Length: 98
Image (cartoon, rainbow, N blue to C red):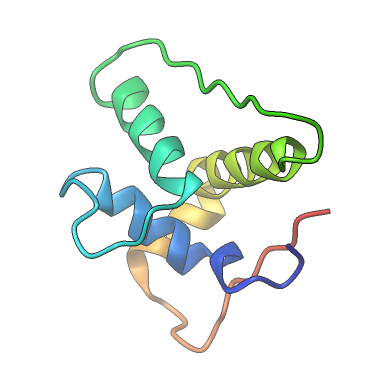
């Protein structure tokens, strides 16, 4: 997952905005689940849970890391600033998952 194009703040922002447009034009991704949970929790004041299950080796740990990385990216003040102000368009904003 390291250095994946889906680990950038731009992609996280696209999925966050996509939660308001039913993810029109975006491919299916765990970020869509995380974005929907985040929006329903923050905008609609509904408690949310994300259940990640599967057999051994099915990617539960990586998926959990992606969900947490989404929440971290969308929640942090620095990420919000980069997502919504475009002060430095040359910044890629790549995040790594370890």
